[in-house]
Image 1: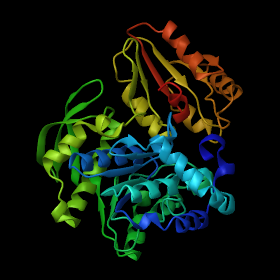
Image 2 (image 1 turned 90 degrees about the vertical axis):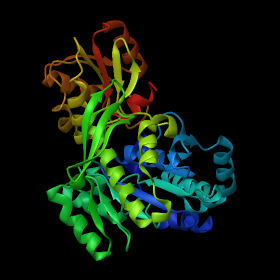
Image 3 (image 1 turned 90 degrees about the horizontal axis):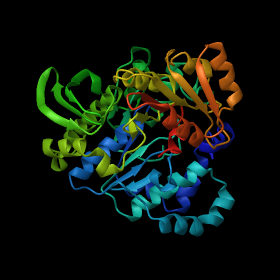
Image 4 (image 1 turned 60 degrees about the vertical axis):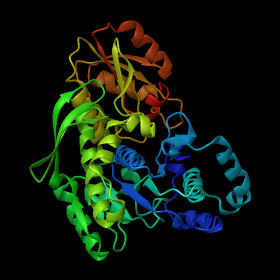
Length: 415
């Protein structure tokens, strides 16, 4: 299981998922879908799209990864995790096929999602890639739309060590005659997408070229904003059930996706009221967790699953703007990330509580000793996330700020 052990669980091939889904009767061909890839923001974009389609009254399947607390978070219908008996029934029924085909954990999960979405006859399924795109197990669907949020350096051991190489892997989800939406125009990689779209005769649009969001009011866990399209105001004072400026680009990506969907499906057009309702009720509709997740109010403790350089920089830049006295950071990483890339982003004035998530991939404390000493940080070290959290609750005053970040798996233990 890649989530726990990393590279040894990764299978760079589609043969297993094809064989398994053939055995299941090709469930991936029995429902409509939107496919989402990208380095950062694909999970949030997927949840936003799910919320908007749910607000329109559609039955929506949502497949994302990894999970935080419960395996069933990966496969939701109208925001609710699938039932335990559905998981048990699937595993029992197809266990002989697992033993024969030898699929990975991820491949089994993707096949399970496809089977459930087909049986439940969802109106639309929002499918997030796991890693990359071209060879990701989800890439056997024939989506109505393809979405690529952005590109930055992550999983370089699998996807390549430059942005264009990574972009080429993500561009693998672009299908023949299937419109593709790009969240952010990045000059160094856009040509990769344009060329692939041209080869597939797929129309291409860039969300950030058209949509813009201007904040009017900001709460602890939401925004009130105005929406502009081509510099003309569309909406004034609508609510977004998100916090963190870095997440607004995902709203823009989702809105461009809806615009293209409406153009493609005029009889199922999603209206302004439905879109606004989805944006205003994201958490309630989809059980969205893990991004700008408020764990405590006094002291204010915010956890976020950002875990690569671009995502972590965006979260930290936003979070430290909050007025506070002392800044505490509970921090852990997985051991297949380059610590220097990440540690250079960490605020120098913070008090660090380094810790280790309960997975084999977790970076050991010895690595944190080295980094903290090299940077002359004020730091303590904890063998468990729970121990670090208990200590910071004791140490921090009500007016202090505590951030929990560095790894999905550190935050997961506190949810």
